[in-house]
Image (cartoon, rainbow over the protein chains, first blue to last red):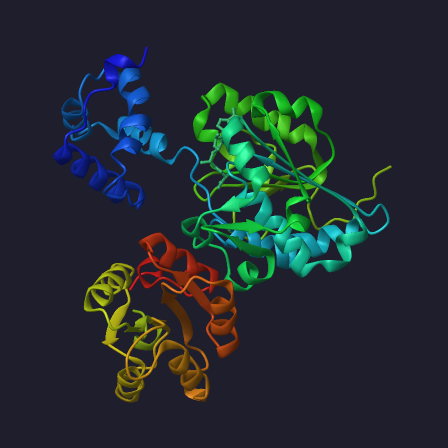
Length: 289
Length: 134
Ligand SMILES: C[S@@+](CC[C@H](N)C(=O)[O-])C[C@H]1O[C@@H](n2cnc3c(N)ncnc32)[C@H](O)[C@@H]1O
């Protein structure tokens, strides 16, 4: 039950927690967002057995409170995402990975992308816009972009492809905004041609991998934090199997598969969190028999 | 050490409060900041300061507006490497297009946040001085 933790958030407590979240994650919480802190932190407090926000603040100030601090930040950032997040993986994808991959797939003319934990869709749509903009020839290929999230609400938002001004201000290059979005009242809607490129599914990452195969590029960013060590290892093993031998795994800025699996290595000469299966270097033009 | 031209910025806005906020954000990222309250003042300031890496410019200002300022900057070849970001409450798509056509590199709609500025700088591949060690 959540009731025990739905303690009232006094204004000074709100200010303290807001400052803490800003210091820790650079996330700005607006004056009228008391509810955000209350609703997101209630489950954390419940789990930690913390009764009041005052008590929570005291605990956050303890010397060894790092794990609790992370849990609080994660609760706030749960669905945090934005267009072209971290930029670098997308530029490396555009300038290095895709040109090579397209060359290797010239005869089969098929590419499969997968996005695990896609939240409100900015990540797959960033790739969709990039494909449209930088690789127009792929329009006649068999392209599949599959994106899943466990949250039905997020999947519905993603399918809608409708974003607030705040969201389109984050990471989306202005030329792409002009080219692929239209204004609908207070919102900005992505054109249908781009929306149609992505197939969204409400599903847990833990279940989806048994249905996937032959993925060329697999995004797994800022989601492993939700799982325990054992599940992370398990998921990475699954990734190894659904990815093509010369495919690519893309992770979040502070993440790397090495913690959970030895089957991947960094893309040579690269620091953008893109990895490939060890068995087959990405530069090889190995022909699948 | 970052060379001065790698960290120099100019903020052009007729609101002192906005200049303060943007200035604080840029300084936290390791940039140095200069300020002007309209396009004409900004052109004057450019005559006497280090060539800026980035200019953040509002649209609606007295004397010379942001769009006119962007066009003027783009006439000046010494400023060819300077990134121009419009930061304005104008939020029609036609306006964004107009700014891009005039020579702006990026566009942020007010109200803005610190991360929006950081993310747009990343999009423009402007190195953050604090991250590469000043
Ligand atoms: C922080 S967001 C990351 C979004 C995007 N990948 C990015 O990096 O910007 C994490 C997302 O993972 C989703 N998620 C959490 N557990 C999941 C699970 N077991 N299966 C699928 N999605 C999950 C959450 O709903 C949330 O939308």
